[in-house]
Image (cartoon, rainbow, N blue to C red; front, side, top):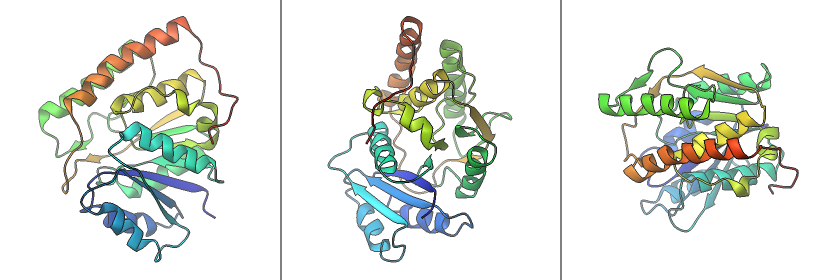
Length: 249
């Protein structure tokens, strides 16, 4: 059995899902994939199910009723992974904005270099983003700067969604207490990981905006991230973060 699971949340990704699955399985490093589909009306889940016989024991799908949000999809996936023997659990988008060729680098950062969380970062060396309008680039870059200023967290790409966790990190976080569901979820998970004293490493990637399908970004998601950061900071001032001693499964 592979030691690594890639969690890919999907909603209306029929243009991308088969391509991303085949690309990941073409890599030399053996990965397993868990697709979490929120009742995509375009048949995304059916495409995955039709591929499962070809990739038996490597490809899995969990179908949920309704569009329940990015954060809850990952929490669902984390718990699924922790019930099994995966040691390295990844977050990744389905739309090729995250290059599958970077997966082994994230893995090696944790498995070989000894870090607990590896983040594929757009902002280590300038701004490594392709196909975004300048307004969105500036919004994303300065949003990360805002998060760093408020939280004091030493992470440059605070909203990054391309990550590898060591199993021990997810076991130490009470996943049922994660508050946010949109992009603030990404900030919250990094912040708690940092506050618990785990070792975090950012590696430089090139982020390429989707060429197929439709972006899921909205004003509501952005607002949640802006306000959520203040909530996280206030909680850290008035209370300590402790490693979870219960069970996330």
